[in-house]
Every structure is written in C-alpha cells, then in structure tokens.
Length: 209
Image (tube, rainbow, N blue to C red):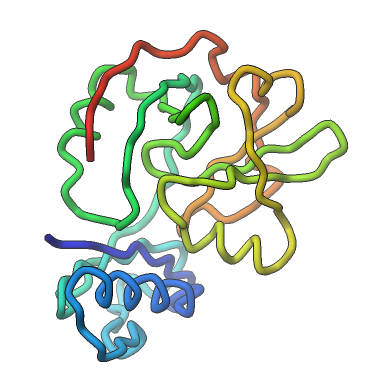
C-alpha cells in the first residue's frame, strides 16, 4: 500500500515541505496507525546534478520512507480537456494508479480528463484545478479528489477560495482555469481559456482508483 509525495526542488531547495510533511504524516497515521512524526527534510539530499533549475523529487512511503528519486521536470502541454462524471475516491496519494493509466490511454496524449461528481467539478487526473470567474477572482472545487499541497498553500495565502463549480454552467461563469500541483504553482501566465474544456461530457468509464 505504497503512497508517495511529489516535491518541487528549485535550485537545490525543496519547496513547501511543511505541506508535504503534514499530508504524509496524516496519511501514515490514518493508514498505518503510527504516531511518530516524519520530517522529509531529513531524507532529501539533492544530488549535485539536480541542484540547478526545476527538479521533481518523488518519495514513496508506507510506515517508513523509501529513498527519494530525482528527475529534471518539464511540464506537459494539453490542448483539449474532457469532462467525465464518475464517483472516484482518491483521498490518499497511492502509487497504484493502473486504472487511471488505462483511462488516460483512451484519449490523445495532448488531452486531459476533468472529473465531476454529481455534476460538480473535482480534479483532473493528476492535479487540482482553479477557475477564474467573470470578476477575476479564482476558485477551486470545494470537494477535490485529493487535497493537494499547492491547493492548501493557495487557500492559506488567500489567493483562491473554495466553491461548488458546476460543470453545466462552467462556460457561463468562468473565463479561465489552471492546473495546479506541487510542480505547477499558481501563475497567471499559465491560465487557459475554459473553451478548451469540451462542453459535451466524455463517455462514462466506471473505474476506481
């Protein structure tokens, strides 16, 4: 039952470790009934070849921490997004995502899925979402699939607010949206027009993570 954290390393420095530590320890306590507190800064030693630029650090864990892995990070561009309704549950960040991988294989490599539950938008397959309304304010779905670290940071900073975002009125109430996660921080330059999100829902797939 492996879980993982993805941590941004910028110029050799891990970013927002407080949020990663918080989620990791809450998950360990909930799933493995352990009481000790782990601090990821005690496990992350950035190799010399990864001390410049944007780097992705992946740490897997159960009760104990697995050796971290590092790689140079290049964000992927998407040109189309599809809404799909499903009662997915992904409260914990498990490494087992085979069903999700199979689902992704059904769409083009430059496309991404956005999930809804009871008509309300939740998350994409790999990130939280934020939406810009007609007044220029940013909102994130109140009930995401996963409480991401970047999402929690933006809420704490007052940069976004939670709201129920309805799929059927999305294109009337919002102008832009953004994918956010540990590797994709909030940046207005990354905002995409909501017109990239297909109004016609993607066929139901009925899978579970």
